[in-house]
Amino acid sequence: MSKQTQIEGVKIKHLTVIPDERGRLTEMLRRDDDIFTKFGQVYLTTAYPGVVKAWHYHKKQADNFVVVKGMMKVVLYDAREGSSTFGRINEFFMGDYNLMLLRIPEGVYHGFKCISETEAMVINIPTEPYNHQAPDEYRVPPHSKDIPYDWKRKDG
Image (cartoon, rainbow, N blue to C red):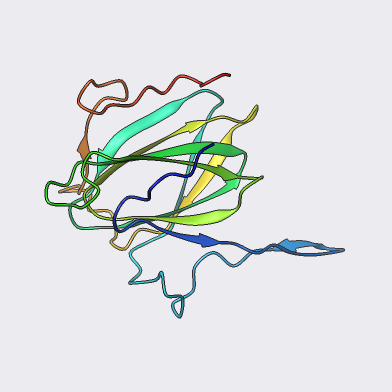
């Protein structure tokens, strides 16, 4: 994969696995990390092989994704007018073979596709708690022409 220019406000923290004879430990996000701003909640979401969950963005919250099982292709689209990276797409292949925390800023569309042979699991640590009465989610269908991205696998 060629080097991509990162969308403005997107941050990555490469994670370290500490193994021993009992198992492993990985710190995801600490309040003293440069990448940390504030805590809203923690939740787990999953996708089955080949499933695409996309697109949405938030006006009030940033997301912090860590794929803890399997592999996901996480895709971002910057639709923020006035952003220096307006119109840019970023792809991140995250999970078992590339452990990282991906910070997705407010206003950036995002979605993911499970690219592993088994269910993939994502931990999200958003900066705001979910508001059931007034969700901060603005959605576009996964194959919408409004976002210039094709979820098909790219062979070659």
